[in-house]
Image (tube, rainbow, N blue to C red; front, top):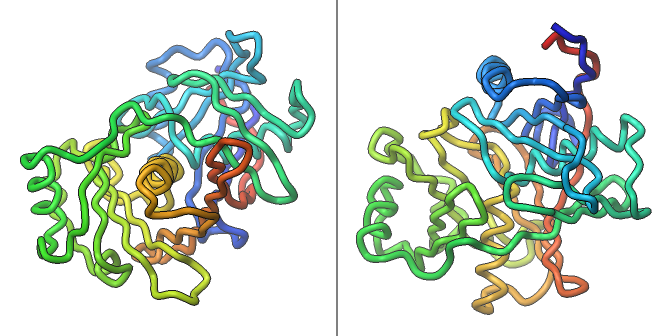
Length: 278
């Protein structure tokens, strides 16, 4: 066993305990895959991450991301929370103001502005309309009236998101999914809020197959939705999405098109600092 620096960070909220927590082992060097998986199961959070020396010459660090059920090539809130913890632990980017994370999907660029960190939304590895069978299954497991469904599209940037656009935020918040029938399907639901509020979209993410029936606030899904929305003209400027209300959270995700990228970000707060014996 080795004593390793550790942090637990609340992501996508300026108020601690209202966002989505991620457990961050700041020095994962020497840990075996099975040891990482075991610790992720033990924390029982939606994600646990391990920072390691980078393999790519342009990266500041290598990030490995685990759910209680296994490893992910990319996830958004662990990316932001890990970057936040790395900076707080005296991490120094190779490029001032910019961070380059190496992970399963390759290099992910981040930038820190004030108390907000944002990542450049990675390209989708699967996109476009879902076929009728997949769309029907997603609608069925959400338990939603098909007349309330606007569209069903793949928005997969690594985790495997199938996204369902509904007619309103109210419909999204009323969902009561069938998690048994959902199985390994990873379904995101999104619907618009009435004009004039502080948030334009309400988002929910359901991933029972990895041991997390509903993820409180989800960066990768919001990044996938952003790619879809800007590609198809559903959005044409900066917006804010809210997520987590159904679980008593208050996550806020900012999406901003700038410099040829879609930047997905939010505030992070460290709640736990210390060490872990691994």
